[in-house]
Every structure is written in C-alpha cells, then in structure tokens.
Length: 109
Image (tube, rainbow, N blue to C red; front, side, top):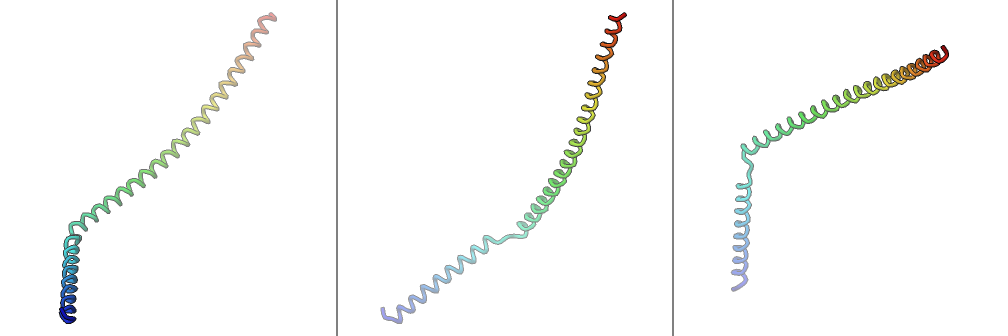
C-alpha cells in the first residue's frame, strides 16, 4: 500500500466515522424530541402545581389567622378565669370573716 492509497483509505474511514456519528446524532434527536402533547401535559402539571401552591398559601394564612384568634380567645379566657378566681378568693375570705364574726358574737352573747 503506497502513500496515496493510505491517505484515501484513511479519508474513507474518517468519512464513514463522520457519517455514523451524524446518523447517530440524528437518531438521538429524533427519539428524544419533545412532542406538543408532552409540552401541553407539562403546562397542565405546572398549572396544577401553581394552583396547589396557591391553595397551600391560603390554607397557611387561614391557619395563622385562626391560631391568632384562638390565642387571643385563650388569653381572654385565662384573664376571666383569674378574675373569677380572685373574686372567689375574696368571697371566701369575706365568708370566713363573717363566720368568725358570727361565732364571736354568739360566744359573747
């Protein structure tokens, strides 16, 4: 094999390698192409995700508002309970004083 034949054989092999590479690239692009249906499905999924996130945000806001209302109501109820307990303590103390007064009065008479 002389030098010219070697160059021609090498050029032919390189051309075949190029053709095989190009064909492979074309096949990969052909099979991995995104169809319109896939794009539409992705758009629907994105919209559903957006709606779900919006609903989640609304639920979180509602829960935070409800928690604040319940905390406020609990604070008010605790304050009312403290006031009632103080009133009851005062009433018990007054009742004890009256009992003592009545007993002293009855013993003195």
